[in-house]
Image 1 (cartoon, rainbow, N blue to C red):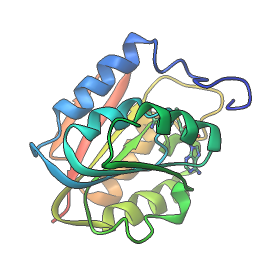
Image 2: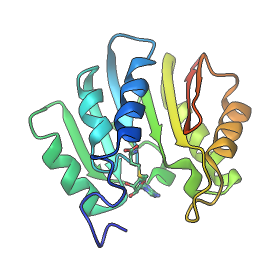
Image 3: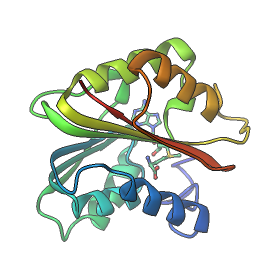
Length: 179
Ligand SMILES: C[S@@+](CC[C@H](N)C(=O)[O-])C[C@H]1O[C@@H](n2cnc3c(N)ncnc32)[C@H](O)[C@@H]1O
């Protein structure tokens, strides 16, 4: 999809996305985070909002075109870095320990076993008291390997009950706290 557009999902123009990003930063329990990690950051629309809540934001995406667009979008924030990186590799030094991990619209690209592995890897990188926030579209989409509801069922099973849960007809948004 990245070969045809700088914003293949039209994340910048859809009210669904804007409202979801607003709610995602609104539910974050801490006013401020030290290091926020955002794998699969896409075009950086949530990254710029995280920039206002964290002293450092380290964002990654597997696709260079997404990284280029997100880098442009975040250029006014010197404390934000955007790099090419595969979520399946887990957080690499110096990205840890972080106090916030954001998994937005990405876990449904993997089967349940890989989804659990990714969630656990990134959750383990969070220091005690820190948070993992996940948000996923619920309706069925052809290119998704599992649904958004299934991805969140895996998260709850692997990480324990969320401390915040927003169930919208369009998406599930949950925050997990590291003990
Ligand atoms: C639907 S977009 C969501 C983007 C962003 N998280 C958001 O919510 O606006 C999914 C993103 O996951 C990225 N992605 C897919 N597989 C990935 C992987 N293995 N590692 C890192 N990023 C990946 C895609 O390139 C794409 O930018």
